[in-house]
Structure formats: C-alpha cells, structure tokens
Length: 378
Image (cartoon, rainbow, N blue to C red; front, side, top):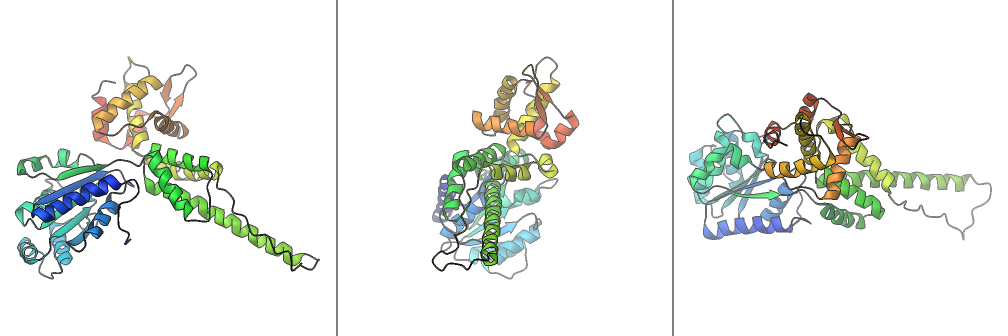
C-alpha cells in the first residue's frame, strides 16, 4: 500500500472534509459513522487511506474488503486484529478490546455493498457499532451506490445518528488533464497537447475514472518506449555493419523521443472502450443516455432527436442524482453510443436505436435507474 500522504490532486476538498469529520469525532469522543460513495476510479479509497495516514499517531486503523470478508464474525475478527487483540471474535470481546484501548479505532469497510442481504443485518450492525459498542469506534463505509443509505438502509434515520455522507464526483476533464500532465512531466515520454486533451475529454465523458486515463497514458508511453528501443537497435546494427570504419568524432545519434499523438491515444481509447466486454459494461453517462433513448423511443407520441434526448438527459440526471455533463462532454458521450452502434443519426435529424429494447436494458444494467427514468414521462 502506498505511503503517500496529503490529498490526491483534484480531491483536496474531499480530503479536508473527511479529515475534519474523523478529527472532530476523535476530539469530541463522538460516535461517528461515515458513508463515502461515488463511481469507480474517483479516488474514494485512496483518499480515506491518506486521511488515516495523516492521523496514524492518533488512531488504530483497520481496512476490510467486504468482497472477501462479508460475515459479522469476519468483521469482528478484523476489528480485533486492528487493535492488536487475539481474542475470540465476538461482540463482547470487541467491546472489551475497544474500551480498553488507549486510541480510538477507525475501521474502513471497502465495497461494503457486498454486505447486503435479505434483511441487511450486517450493514445495519456495522453502521450502528459506534452507538452500540463504543464511541471509540469510527466506521467508514465505501461503495459505488450513491443512495445505499437512503434506499437500502432507510431505518438508519431512526437511530438519531445516521452516517455522515459524502459523494466523490467523477473527475472532470480539467482534473484529468492536470493529473496526466503532472505524470508525464516525471517521465521521458511526451504527449501532444491535443492528444492529452483527447484522452482527458473522452475519459471524463465516459466515466470520469482516473484509473482508465492513467491506463491509456501507461499504454501509449509503453508503446513509445518500445518503438524508441527498436530504433536504437537498428541504429547500432546499421553502424556495426557499415563497411566504413566508424569515426571517433561522430558518435551515434541518440534515439529521439517520439511525441505521442492523437492516433496512438485514439487507438488506446478504442482498445479500452470498444471490446465486447466494454460494450456490455458502458460507463454511467453513456448508459444514462441510452436509458433516456430507450424511454423516449418507447413513447410513440414523441420523436427521438438530439433536442429531446438532451432535455430528457437533464431531467434524468436530477431523478437519479447524477451531476450532468457539460455540452462538450455530453456530445462526446453521445459519440460513444454512436461509435458502439447503439444509436444512429438519420438524414432527417432524428436519432434511432440500433439495438432492441431487451439488449438496451441489458447494457444499461440498472433496473432501478430504468424505472426512475421511465416514470419521468419523457
């Protein structure tokens, strides 16, 4: 795990908010639980881990990936391990260990949506530990679903101390551009300004997943280094096979660093987003647009046009509590649907779905979102 401290670029506000919440809970000996949500690749886990590193002298901390540890007994065991206790994992031993500890315990439950069950007993129990066991326990849950505490854990409101909630918004084009520039400044490889903007714009429109943007940069720089290495080898071969004796005063020219351009970036983007797997797992914004297309197309009294699609999209964003894209990024998200052959632009200016409704629903892959949008009467 990285030992870097301080906020991630583009996540300064979120870092300060989380640091303030945890620090206040420690200072006031206050029962506290926190829920962090947001799309994949928005820096949720990395930010909270940096917060904990900044507070490492003041707390014990533990980290649980709920995809692999999803039982209450398993969570009790992780709590005890974080404190340094080898007691039997029961609720009584956890209470005793926490109360006898000099420092409070912060337990991070990553991918906590894996704790969902018929009655959500583990989820409710985890969020209630600070109140039921000890104010020394601070629970921080992380998941993608923005409305998990509202939709699935509505009874938390009745406890009087529901979790503090914060949403990590997708990285913007400007955020991604700044971060990629910083990364490239630390490397020998250079990227054309327009190519960098293309990468940032496409990733922001698709998902705002910084990890995807970094993957694109890593892929293109790796290819650039490979090309540079091959050219250097060819120069050596040409020089050694020459019939003329090499001149000591004319050294071999250094292999130049080729500038990474739009063609290489576009190729990497297509590879990342155009595979069958990527088609089946479109990021949120294109899926949201596709859901709106599906809803409008089902309305026989209304035509599917860019105007009706964009108007419906804005209403849908409000309905599902997702921040809308600006006009440029929205157009880019629409281009994604066109390039993947989900929709096509007709000669009369209208849009048409190129897949049947069942396929579109499978690609959207979110029944709750489809139901919410279908109720808007688009």
